[in-house]
Amino acid sequence: MRLPTGAELWPIAIFTVIFLILVDLMHRRQRWTTRYPPGPMPWPVLGNLLHIDFQNMPAGFQKLRSRYGDLFSLQLASESVVVLNGLMALREALLKHSEDTADRPPLHFNDQLGFGPRSQGIVLARYGPAWRQQRRFSVSTMRHFGLGKKSLEQWVTEEARCLCAAFADHTGRPFSPNTLLDKAVCNVIASLLYACRFEYDDPHFIRLLGLLKETLKEEAGFLPMFLNVFPMLLRIPGLVGKVFPGKRAFVTMLDKLLTEHKTTWDPTQPPRDLTDAFLAEVEKAKGNPESSFNDENLRTVVGDLFSAGMVTTSTTLSWALLLMILHPDVQRRVQQEIDEVIGQVQCPEMADQARMPYTNAVIHEVQRFADILPLGVPHKTSRDIELQGFLIPKGTTLITNLSSALKDETVWERPLCFHPEHFLDAQGHFVKHEAFMPFSAGRRSCLGEPLARMELFLFFTCLLQRFSISVPDGQLQPSDHGVFGALTTPCPYQLCALPR
Ligand code: HEM
Image (cartoon, rainbow, N blue to C red; front, side, top):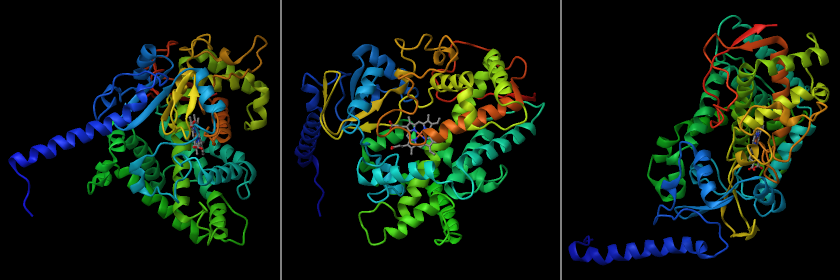
């Protein structure tokens, strides 16, 4: 076949440019309606991709908010995005229009990593029967069944003991707590999924943790977003493996763990854990093509629970310890409450929480101040909706700026400071706040919230019951001004844990 040359190429080039402009205009047409939220002018083809500060999206969005208001729009290539800011807009979208905003936008690169119509997992599942089935299954498994012989609380308490023992091994020497916190929290998920815990020095465990963190890193930044808005690039042979090697290896590792688990599964016995319960559902669903219970989805659900439940909780705990170092007066008051309510001998239990308003307020304030998932997880509209007077068409991606509620100046007395009194009334009783939404709200809100709360309370109180936490002299300057507030993870730090 002869390739076109010279003058013959011009009409093709002109046609291509006209075609791209028409496609671009088609994507922009909704911007021309007067009731669509304002936003920066998009460039042809790329849209606003170059307007986004990928190093610090929350700060970049804050600037756009002050220019365009609580609802502003962005165009990411062909994807229409609206960013929601402020308590009112978030509540209206997530609670009033809960159903119409409960869909998720696709993450195309996952299609080559085990995600598919029958294996959508939970976190990124489209709003529909498969998501509903898996969400219901995970929530009820976590809530109701005692996970074999032990309740989830017993697993967490036992893990808190192991964590304290690991802290004690470092007595007198400064160390970074992050890896130990990751291991403890990961073991809680492992107990839920596999009714087992790993020793902290088990090489398989260390690899699993490493891969988990790598997968999260690989999803962030410009390149994954670019590939997601131009999914045809994902067809380039070998590209996905190059850009997401950690994700590939993580999927392989999950498969291995699940295969091992299946060899010890006895369907005639009560389920030991979530995986056993899932396998029983797979058996029941055989021959039902509509069911989301199948082997591929088991891997996606397990991967979702590991990745959604691990780094979130351990990062919050890391913040909690750092904030206790920066605020020794708060640390002392928590320890005083622990001594009064639990004492030095008994292990903390969830039942103690109701009698510990100060500790409860401190944990809430840690979550508010740390603001670890400032932009939540994107949603998508499944119907045209009206929000704060604007019209948002069906199929628009919504970014929920949770940070804007957690740091809302009209709600919190000292939004940028660590101030546990935000959650206490004049009598020292614990008070809730609508604007406290680190777990988001509505239909897609975090399903692991009860487990996360349990871990935060039990790990935090166990550690402070046994240790006083400080930093080696002069290594960290106490500050009450949210120096780390803009970051989702605290700056790397080392601490000393002295037995009390
Ligand atoms: C401090 C700890 C945690 C925080 C701050 C947190 C926060 C969040 C947030 C903001 C979302 C997105 C909600 C939305 O789309 O509107 C989410 C979703 C989710 N979280 Fe968590 N999470 C935590 C711990 C956990 C744990 C321990 C688990 C499970 C073991 C978990 C499982 C999930 C799942 C499965 C989803 C997706 C829910 C859905 O799409 O229906 N999270 N989480």
